[in-house]
Length: 311
Image (cartoon, rainbow, N blue to C red; front, side):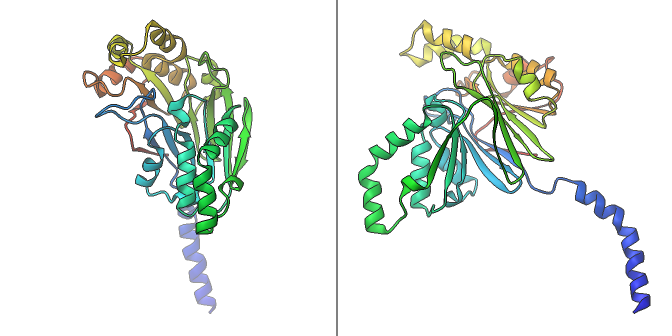
């Protein structure tokens, strides 16, 4: 027995440095999936889907923004909707929250019976209560006829402001306001653990405050426009006016400016999403890369629907 103990101690002394090294590695399988990467609400044949994201940190999954297609996007990633518990909405433009209600209702019909916390700007409660009112007949029927819990009791709304938003299971979330007129309650969001820091720009014109907010982040997901592609985009929309171009220029960020923000923030990787345009066949990966060339030297990821970014 004494010899066995000595043998064990000898083996432990050999493997201890290796075990300590492995313990220090990020073994949590953290990742981000860009479920929808299109800027704007319109969907046309062949286009990508508007903005939604899956965030997996410390073993818990969260959803950021719920545009058209978010439910199918989550299913395609193997997510069980009945396990939904955390949703964040960056601002109240339809390409960021149009499918929030249908996502929650579908999760409910798929077995959801635990609380879902929704963090979003002022007014998100009006959307949710309006959705419940529109689906009252169906919800009430399923409660009585199928014995389901009351969906109304499963959702809690939290109105966010700049600063600390929440903390759960080692994930800390904070926010800053962005420049996205005419809206005021528009937010960039930071997700931090002891090992990982991910920042989403939300919709914004170039914002110097984002450089400090995202300082040293492992990943910055930033909205982006191709300057040369905007005139063709405006012509293709068909039912807008010069006001649409004015909105784009004052409320969104060119790809080269997103790259400059990433450089000044010292982030390790930059992912472009909420792409404007994302569905013009005349523009592709090379155009986005060229727009950022000379402005950011780190790893650049040009968003595509369903792309998974390991952390």
